[in-house]
Image (cartoon, rainbow, N blue to C red; front, side, top):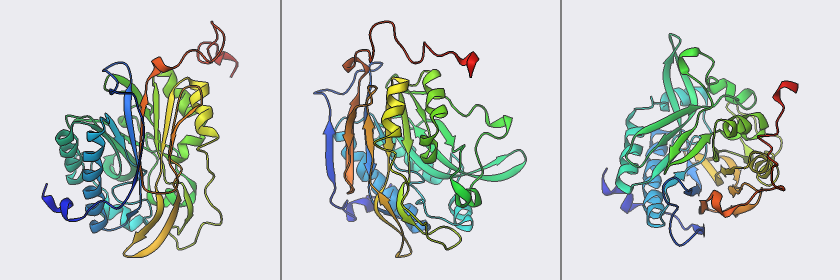
Length: 319
């Protein structure tokens, strides 16, 4: 990669860090970073800008001992796209943008969760997915997760739902970063308790959820949303963490998103990292922020008297 990122200084941002003196040792936990910022969308130039910003944020996060750095939904392309733009910017999971992401992960020695528009041939057809690439610190792609629950008519115009076809494999799987098990969900999927529960039952100790929760957006057919997106960061996200006894992180944008200089959306800036007691470990204001917290299960005792467990006490034969 060139040094062009040096010629585009990162805009002012706030660093919120809630960590122990040392990052978690392998197998004990994970130092998680969430990037919340503004950006551009919908053009090849926007993808380049977003990659340059990713490089800059990764360098800062690595200096803070972050072991996994996550970005908002469809970070590389921007969230606001039309079906035509989605098809123009989409890449395979080993495409040029993802190769650069892998190189950034290797260069800075940290894992990256980077949402992107995926192009793939599935069941004999070319399809397009709202996807999340999880890359480890050596640049290996651990998972490209395809959004399964698409929001409203607009996303269904742009994307195919993931894991409809057997050749895609299982939807809800657990990967290991720093020896710590985590699962991925995407935006609207934060609002389905079945999904975070499924990941917890698969062994996830962290559910990571990039999102694009907006205050307004111009949809792909030209209409503007009629109300802000519900803020689930202080309601459903803590509830999922508590009833699954795991960490849950919600990574959103803030400010505005532009396409060719035109403001197309504004975002809530409600990124949070929540502990397994439903406690708020870290929360961003609606401003560019690098949010960092240690996800350490050893910091927590049981939520109930001994012998009580939501997961162990389930009776799935009844439901």
